[in-house]
Image (cartoon, rainbow, N blue to C red; front, side):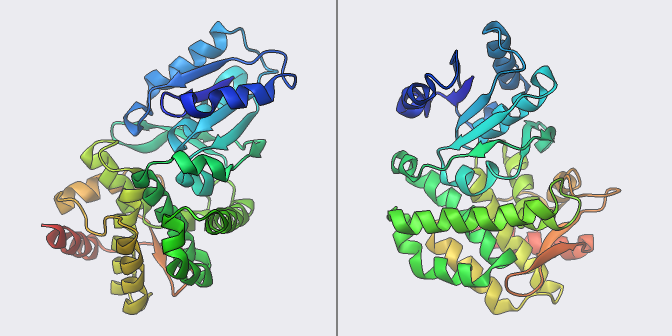
Length: 325
């Protein structure tokens, strides 16, 4: 069963189906509506309807052909269908290639928060075809670059400096630059996931910027900002919090903000009350006992989970919102 969406299916579904002929006795497909706002129970149930309507069974393999939303829904469906069937990720966006397709996290959104309903279900294969990025809209490319940039501050400052030097090539979709960015991002993420598959500790470093970012997505309404756009603003806020806690030098924070700005990504937070941010962040999966835990930078190229007082967080939010007003 190939799960795709209304945007990607016309571009690549027939090609994938042809490549699967002879490998599988039957190939079925479903094209979901496109957009983060459709990452919900109704869309997930449409995948189950397609699987059952096609008389799929435990020998079925689910292929996810699309971006992060398709990958998360298809992976979650595979985790649940018949108590778990194999799935293969074929990500067609930069964000999915460097982040969401790798690591086995699958989920749908809940009105109160992002990715709150899901399961860990590792793909058998992740196939990143750089050629699919040719058809990617510029806004989606830039949003994907936010997740590429993320890996530098948390794990490899030399990679961050490489992105600084090659950003123009990446924006121009230079094939060699994109191949290196995707490969290095996957290497970093796979290395972290191998040590902490179910996010009990060190894997939380991969969520740098996501605590603030998920609050932005939920607060504005899913799909208003792209995930990578929200993460970009969230990284600026998380870096600012790291500076206030004395963990990161201010120049490193400024370089991160400058790079995101050069990429055309938002570096200022949308206007929501600090209390609304705090309310949404307390629903974050890293929170414990109502206490928000943030992924903080501890120097250049390292990160860890930490906490901060609500007053300190309010100050960061107020500053970020004030700059955007």
